[in-house]
Length: 378
Ligand SMILES: C[S@@+](CC[C@H](N)C(=O)[O-])C[C@H]1O[C@@H](n2cnc3c(N)ncnc32)[C@H](O)[C@@H]1O
Image (tube, rainbow, N blue to C red; front, side):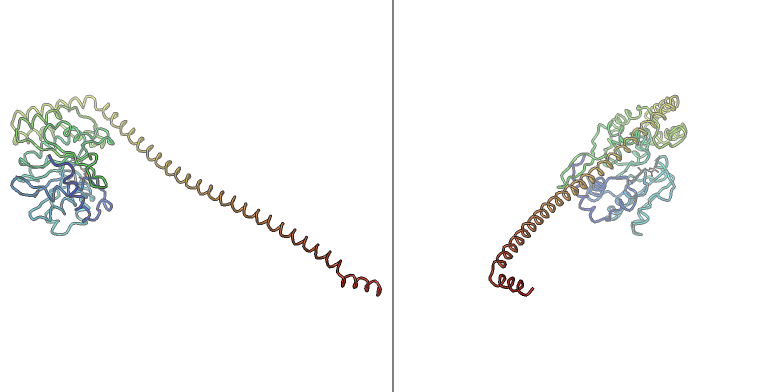
């Protein structure tokens, strides 16, 4: 779909022009994924030579990724970024509102407390050049998001999926299911090594939506058939975040934008999955909780192991300092004992010398005369 590492390399250079917003606000995209996004927005052109002009982000959170997309996109005229998030929290798009210029903000359209079910209102008929699906990650949310956005894409639109491999959150595998099932063109962005050569893949994937409806359905159906599992984020009391009303709403949307047969079969499949999930939801909730517990324990232990390794390194350093001190001490002791020996021998020599002088004096004539005189006058 894209030349491996091409946009990442372009984005790497661009990234340096930006301040590192990820340090200031909570970001859920890796720096190397931001390189790809910057490179894509900066340099990608469609067949008619047009750049990416409209983008939609599903799941905004603090808006760090949105800020990079918005700033890079706004370098070109006509760019607009739309964002939606289920939450109405103060933190949503905090980075954008804190760091974007008034001109950039005029091209930012945020819809808090909205989901992909509201796409008709948000898109109001336009087609997006790029869509970033990064909202609820548990199945079936991402496939429902994808079904909602497809009618608002053109033939060459790019769909990005975050966390196409996320094994740190149990059952947060909705995007993974889509990416794995996708038989059409797809691309997983890469990490760059220190010489900017492509390394291993990141968790950010892109897929191309086939214009042929049959092919499209062929890609979507295996995901629709996949049974539901409890979300690790507890959207509701059954940990699913999807109810019968949602499925009916989706069916009504699909009847408008897809052929009736596909709308019907999608509804029937999702409804069957829902019923099946509800029968066993207690098991699924506990299963997800248990896997989450294991992952947390694993993370906790690996943090502890890191701490112990650090302490071990510090102890090793301290030990080598003690050994050095010991060597210094031994050396000083050796020097001192040599010095002491030297002094003793020196003193001995002096005493011997003094004895020799004493004997010499005693033997000398003036001394003997003086002794005799002392004896006479006593
Ligand atoms: C992984 S974060 C988004 C991160 C953001 N794209 C970034 O790169 O920094 C997921 C966000 O999706 C929102 N969310 C969860 N379920 C949603 C849904 N069904 N529709 C829209 N947003 C949802 C959450 O409130 C959260 O802010």
